[in-house]
Image (cartoon, rainbow over all chains, first blue to last red; front, side):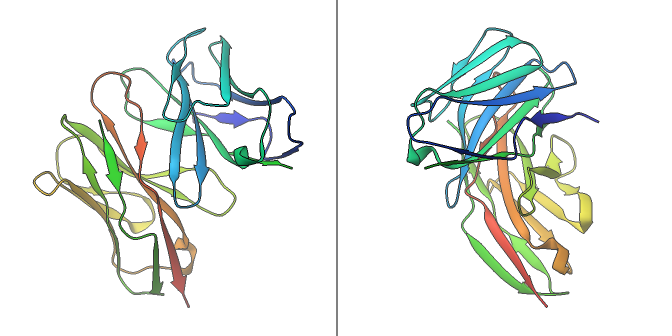
Length: 112
Length: 114
């Protein structure tokens, strides 16, 4: 089975801190995605990557950056965390040419 | 651009009753369609998918959905719900070409009442 692992299930950070959310997949997928999930808004795409060192902005990239130095790892970075970034963050991966995406368990981030 | 509309944000239903969760999409090109389920404090789990072929697709846990191209709908149904079906359900689409990004609806919270 495909496994997408997010490093933390729950995270509490202070306003202004630099925050790293890590995601690792073990099936050699080319494409990786970061979403945030908020009540009433569903899942919104923050960034995605279709290859190592490649990245594309999604619908809500402001306040975030990403890093993909290795194929299996896709990191989401909050340069200076703010309270409006309190949310559930979901990572996903997918093989090019295949329609199915696989999701991690999510990281619930609280910024205080 | 693609968009997904889930008109019902919350659906309460009694145990063993049937349920339908509605999903409509908008796209100028052919799409794949998905339903995901999210149990409390968990990630997303694929419930079922429509890629091509028969418009009636069956998924896990007794759920099924029907793709209706003329009405651009992909409604999810179950003839008899169980307490354990209480969860949030997301409809999603992706185009068949290009980046294949998933576009999600806003979700429907299904609450099964004993």
